[in-house]
Amino acid sequence: VQSELAKRFNVFALDMLGAGDSDKPPRDHYTIEDHAANITAFMEAMHLPMASVVGNSVGATVAIQFALANQYQVKKLVLIGCPVWTVQDGQQRLGEARKTGYDEKGLPRARSLEETQKTMPTATKDLVATMNAIRAKSGVWALKTMEALAEFDVPSRLAGIRFPTLILYGERDAIGDKKEYLQQKIRAS
Image (cartoon, rainbow, N blue to C red; front, side, top):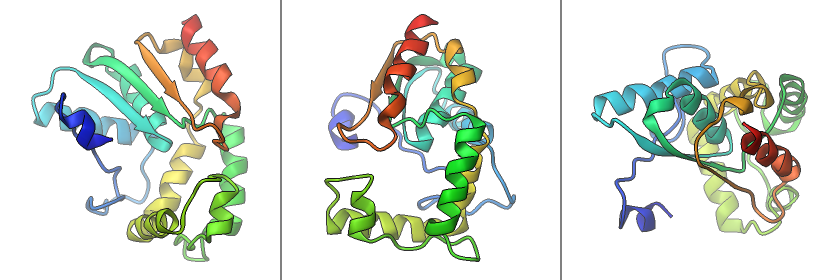
């Protein structure tokens, strides 16, 4: 997708702090607000006055926070698979994830194809292998990012979104149960 978009637009794909190939942060914990501030710093360093902001999953919540904090720098917003969780929802899901998704050191456990297909029915062995490699590379930051998400109340922020916004979920997306709610709250603002 990035390469197709790059044919017509300047595209920057940022890793979240601690994830992917980014440096592992010296701090112990980062909030969604901290991740959004990282985008602000990147845009300042690159002298980018305005951008369309796209976020997937946790990145969608970061995109929401960035857009709210930097309203004059956002052209459009694209939210892909956005978890529309209250703090209570997030804490419940975090508790479930800690039980099965991470070991006693907070490192992500490898997921099986069958386990992944419960939430991503079309997942393949190759996709699961890629996802496991990404999570392993992130180490404890995979759980720390989940913790940041669990502390971020998405519904309370939706009324502030005043940009053209595209909302995308997969047909069988496990967290797509609130997509209509997300659409209504953004449309009503």
